[in-house]
Image (cartoon, rainbow over the protein chains, first blue to last red):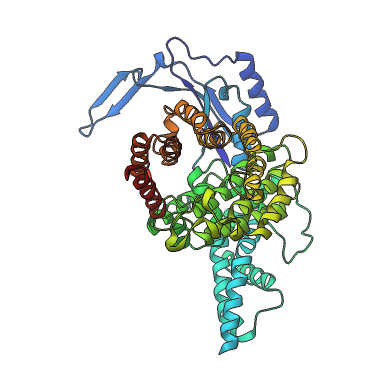
Amino acid sequence: MKYMLLFMSPATDGEAGNGCTFEDWIRYDREMKDAGIWVSGHPLQDLTTCTTVQVGPDGERTITDGPFAETREVLGGYDIIDVPDLDVALDWAARSPGATGGASVQVRPVAEIEVEV
Amino acid sequence: MAGAEAAAGSVEAVFREEHGRLLASLVHRFGDLDLAEEVASEAIEAALVRWPVDGVPSRPGAWLLTTARRRAVDRLRRDRVLATRLAVLQAEAERADPAPPADVDPDLPDDRLALFFTCAHPALPAQDRGALTLRFLGGLTTAEVARAYLVPHATMAQRLVRAKRKIRDARIPFRVPGADELPGRLPTVLQAVYSIFTEGYAASSGPDLQRTDLAEEAIRLARILRRLLPAEREVAGLLGLLLLVHARRAARTGPDGAVVLLDDQDRARWDHAMIDEGRALVLVALTGPTPGPYGVQAAIAALHDEAADVASTDWPQVVALYDVLLTMVPSPVVALNRAAAVAMRDGPDAGLTLLDGLADDPRLRGYHLYPATRADLLRRLGRHDEAAAAYRSALALVGTDPERAHLLRRLASVTDD
């Protein structure tokens, strides 16, 4: 069963940092790959590079810089892992550098849409 | 038809005892709670038809399980999508937990412990864990669970459906946590059973102070846990606590269901056999390194149950145990109980000082026992006007009718001079 781990960190002025290092993430990445559970994943660039797109009922496209204000938590990256059940997924989430120092990991099952062929 | 009636009666008794076990075995075998529920109730329906005619089989649990398994296999033959999904589930479960050894008793394995851990999984909302435990291990119907928590049937049905959906879709496993995870996972299981008991012991609202059937169901569940986890001292502590508190049930309410406080209870009406059983469990719970919070609470309950009256209660020891408990459970409710015990040891003034220190705790806002305890201490100090004001605050918050009547009587006693 696939789960997405979403690495959230509190939005702070300046760069969000929970004290973990680049090396911590490299190590975690390697552990997942060695365990054979890693499906995909990426870190994301910071919010200053984010752009929001919305299409209104009349088809009009609105493009805005951000979001910045009112954002309390920022998605810093994600991994998709394939593990037997939620306990194992929670365990991997807890082992990640993204679970400590005020940051948190959201664990969401991936919806598998079965299409009859 | 007396025979048929007797059979129907024992059928009922068997279901009560076997339902959780049956359901747990089916969940273990098929990995799907919905399927397990459906075929379990089909097997029970079949028993209701057959047993009054054929008599209750010698091994009713095995009969139910065999019948339910057949129904499940039939269902899977007809429903290919479900069968495929469960086959995948099975394969993945084996990947996580390589081939479990064959059951010792293939007819009646006891898989309830895994189901306890599923129902009280920390990924489920805390308020639903007790309800799930009552439904799936207690074998109560949804309507009965709704009544237990005093919520409308539709509300409870919706909560149970949502929780079951999360168990299925997020794949919360049916598995007893390993030895290394157990200390982290056991507390939510104990808490779920304890929450059922407290709802029975002190209903949060309604016409009755206590609902004995619910408290007894919690004790039954705690006994099952004790059998399944004999080495866990906190399970002994929980069962001991429930027994030592429940032992006072007959003395807790007077005629007309009026509340009788510990001070005024007729201790001859306490259940002394239950107290003895509870005290033995306290010994188990406290023997060894680092006792847990249930063991300590059970020890406090035992000190009350052992005393001939309130005056001769070992209050210094009660306070000392609350000190220990407070280090484990830094909750304002524990601090409130400790303050009441200090008032008994050192006098109402000392207790009042401690209570005033808790006045700003937001977690006590809305908790009627805070102003009620304060009011009692003020009354004992002869500060009747302040006591009356505190009783009125408690009255604005209280949930059950007998407690309201008690507070009104106390209010009258400080305003009638």
